[in-house]
Length: 333
Image (tube, rainbow, N blue to C red):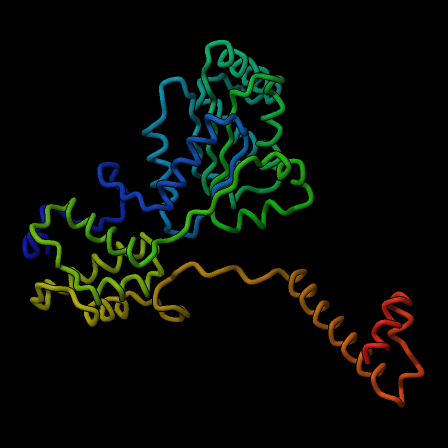
């Protein structure tokens, strides 16, 4: 609708990832390099986290497109599966038989690893949205690595998900899995400069004859409300272009961006847009923090009591601290 008005050949901010128009920010380039290293370094387990809409799916697509022919890939991006469905999916992706018998699947999977070792090939299992996996399936994933014989090092397993994955992995039952994680990486959101580069990149790829469609103030406003989240940048910019076309504005300014954000705002949403926010500390962490504050407060009271002549004779602090340290404090006072 607005493409002709702005001199574009197609919509520049479509939400569907375009393999031909992948913008690689500095953090995305680093993330892709680490994923490739995770395959070559034979670390077996790698954990990659990213906030919602930060481009981890796009990053995984870039990795898949760069894989060599000697890599057997299984990419699972819908983890809401029962255990039998989980093994059935892996078997189908790796060309293994599955008749509902887990024992036979494990035998075939072990044979595949041995064959790949003999042929100098690799097996790569990528589990996207891994923060949704139940603990029992995460344990099944760990046990798959037990089938690799010593010295083979052909299997790489990537767990990719939102930051909640770290909390899920803290479960005591997953301690053996945590001990096998060789690489961890968090994909950060765009900086202001990266947001600017991203918008210009998408406009250029959409055939823009000039790149000043968004003013600098508009770009800064887009970054502020999206907090550098690529998916939200796409939504805001697309809506702003539509609104700009409707109002006959050849240049998108900050005011038009704010209008677009108001139109997109969900009722009851705390933030202008549904951005990812840092998870609240766990109850245990809050209790530990409160406990630390309480201990410091008690120590402060005891120190004051030691300094006051009326209560110095009680010397509760002396019962806690070593005698040498207690004497040092008294001499200092």
